[in-house]
Length: 596
Image 1 (cartoon, rainbow, N blue to C red):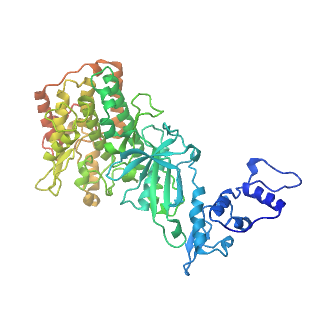
Image 2: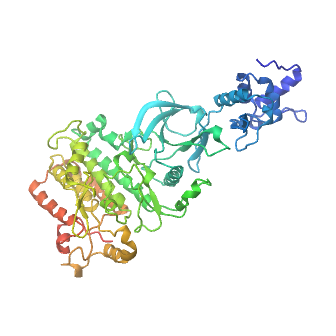
Image 3: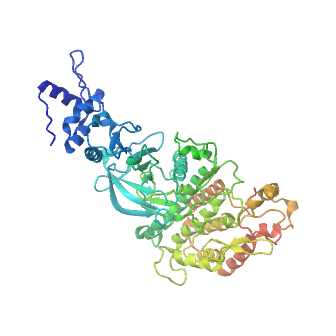
């Protein structure tokens, strides 16, 4: 034990006041107001006591190395000697003069016991915390993991002590606040992280309940490397803790009881439509984004293309990037809210109709439109196709109930895996690999085109024919098939320089009377609705359901024969190179023609 000790009683009293942060007596009056207390040296003294160097406190006071300076950084000199420095400095502190490396290392490790961070809510946006990996975090893991799009990309449930944060969340039974901690993908770079943070900061400002909120970000660095070479960092996002993703909702027994066989079914169908409307409106906010602001960060300077760009494509709308918050305080329905997340693929750009998205690893092709595989220029309606895929599975769940865990024959339950396998039978990639996309590629002599996967049409036909399909759901299915899952003719990215003007005119000129009798190849192909148009269609659907309860309660399966004929025509009309007259196209389209 260090043999140093104090002998002067007044000096001890004076040091005690400095250590606890009480200012010295000035003008004969001792100011005790806590608002003017100084940081003090309580944590510093505690670390010195455990290091058995407590007499050094006087030197720390002389060097003004108080509690606010902790934690100290460390570096190893050319003589293999460990020295401690202030954060952001490479100069060794003189208060450690005369210490050997083992004592310095002991103090360096001990200090972390007293510097657990406090996570604050910032009204200006999410805060980025940079901490050494040795820093103790006031987190406690809870037994909850939520898949967030890809394998190993998990949201992990944590609890944070209430005295270490002022960010509101949901209280657990233990009285701690629950959050979701998500580590960046294994293949993501630091620039990718800051790009996604820029997106999340932007969407956090949107006035909607259907986009997940980024609360703060966390970067854990190897502190011993600071000041000598770039440190290896672990990067994390922190969100409110969802009840699960959309697949988790579909597998939830209690949720499914609300769907099937009780008086809540109609109300529940309205809830689903309302949530789908909210998600679509949120996507529309991304599609028509306003210029965002970036923090002054060296890494973010490499992502400055976000600074002045205002149009966005989410590009990764799948059930695992849509999250269910059953106990949200913002919810007006017992089932809560669903919110869109998963912004790792999101791209912002200047010209909405002329962009090619470079997708990162971990991207899910299942819910992507055909233009990605065909190498075509994409637009914001990329997300409309993905929403249509998700909505179709949502409607399947409403009508068919909980997903079955074992294979079955017939539509007596909602089996996602079987639906996926059915799509694989009809869809192969350009490399002849089976895939479960909602479209299929159609090889041609001059070029490969695409149309709707027959398994999708068979699923829609079976849902229409189901005894529990109400008029409300019939109309919802029509919206998905006729106006969202539409194969669009788009220019190839490689040909954009030579054919941009031609294709732009083909896509944006609505049909007129003089166009009747011409083929769609020479006039215009079908187009997906925009996000704003889908919101408008869903508003009409919800309004009809509220004004006329018959749309919600009375069910009548449609005859298979009639629907088979209609969907046969849809299959023909869905191909990019349609050989039928435009008049027939308009005649067979149940929904109004949507021009450019």
